[in-house]
Image (tube, rainbow, N blue to C red; front, side, top):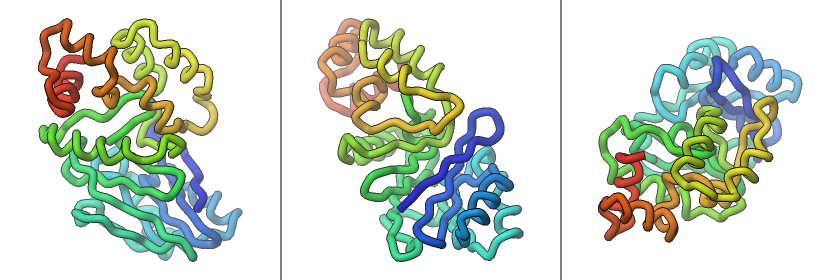
Length: 233
């Protein structure tokens, strides 16, 4: 399974996931670029879908449906694990509520398309107000192998790492992370990278727990620590 990333608007990231001559467009706001890549590589786009229904992830849907033979897969109708056939391979999908109630994540053996659930360097806002659901969604994500590549819904890397540096002062991995960041290239990290620098999923790290204790924030459980970080940083 292969993946091609496209930037649109100022910081949105969309994707074409494909195998052989078949593909699925995810958050396909870069319509012309996506179609040109598909045409040059003889890829037929069979499915058009989104990581969630926020307007900045859906602007390409209508045009892609008009200009391809693809069918729309509504993320709001996915509430359990599902798969879609892409050529001779299978792309997995799971419901990941938190950022929104209809957020979903796509995954293969070596990468995830996480939308606004997990960014490179931070996590999305909990617009659903369901912190427990968001925590469980992120717990599922961070259980993947450390080598798993993370493809997110926006490029927020610079501002996210600045915040991470303010929260986790002296963390040497933040500078290493930034050196690998290329704003003109593919925006991607590994889960191992995220667990070293992303403060919102480092709720089990000793240093982060000590910072929370120093501020007299709840730390007794994983969820309490996650919620403390989300609400105070």
